[in-house]
Image 1 (tube, helix red, strand yellow):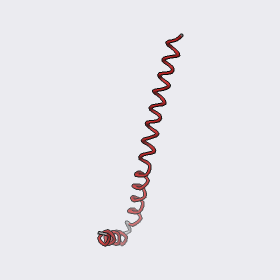
Image 2 (cartoon, rainbow, N blue to C red):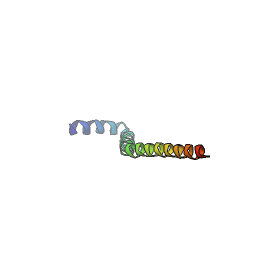
Image 3 (cartoon, helix red, strand yellow):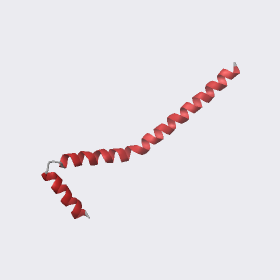
Length: 63
């Protein structure tokens, strides 16, 4: 399996596409690493907005 991948990369490198493959792999790695923190940030933001809305409703209803 590794030999097959190595041969593919060698073929691509001869065509000048090695840099493109490297950039694509780096972007893929960054996306895979960043997915969970971004998801958690979205959930935290959503919870914060919900809490703020609830507090605003309580304040406005008490007046």
